[in-house]
Image (tube, rainbow, N blue to C red; front, side, top):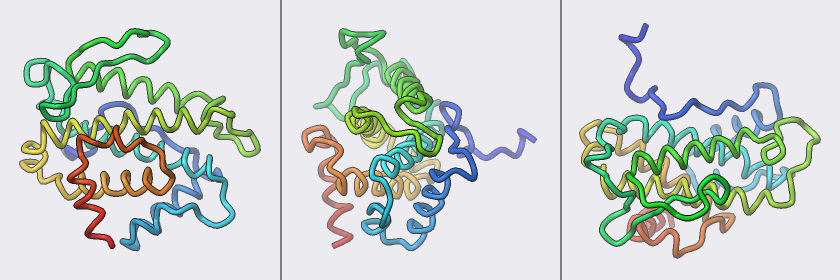
Length: 215
C-alpha cells in the first residue's frame, strides 16, 4: 500500500478532520464547491445567513490542512543545515514564542519553528472551547483574535516556502498547487481583514500580482 502513496499525500502533521454530517462539514463542502467555480473572490465571501466565526473556523482548519500538505512535500529540503533560521528572504526573520510554553521569542531553525508553529495551531484547533465542533456551542469572545494569530502564523510558512524553497516546489511540479492555495488564503484574509498589511510584506509583490489578475 505504501508503495503507491503519492508524495502529496504526505502531511507534516496529522490532518485535522471536520466531522462528517456536521454543519461545519456542510460549510466546508460549500467552500469546496464554490472554489470549483474558479472565482476565488466570490468563493471566500461569507455565504448568506451563515455565522462569520463559523465560516472563519472552517476555512482556518482547511488552510491548516493545505499548508500541512504543502510543507509536507518539501520537508526533506527544509533542514537544520539548509534553513538554520526561520526566514522569508534576507530581510525577514521570525523568532518563535507562543506566550505560554515559550514566552520570550527564541531564534531557531525553520524546521523547528514550523514544527512549533504547526503544533501550536493544532492545539488551538483541537481546543473545543476555541473551535467548538458541536452545534449550538458558541464561539468564545476572543475567537477572532485567536483566528487572526493562527492565520498570521500560517502565512509565515507560505512566505518561507516561497522565499527559500520555490526551486524545490518547481522540481516537484507543485507550483500551481502552491499558488492556488496561497491565492485562496490571501483573498480570504483580505476579505475579512484578518492579517495586518505589515505582516504580509515578505510576499507583497506576489500578493499584488495575484490580485491584479483578478480585477
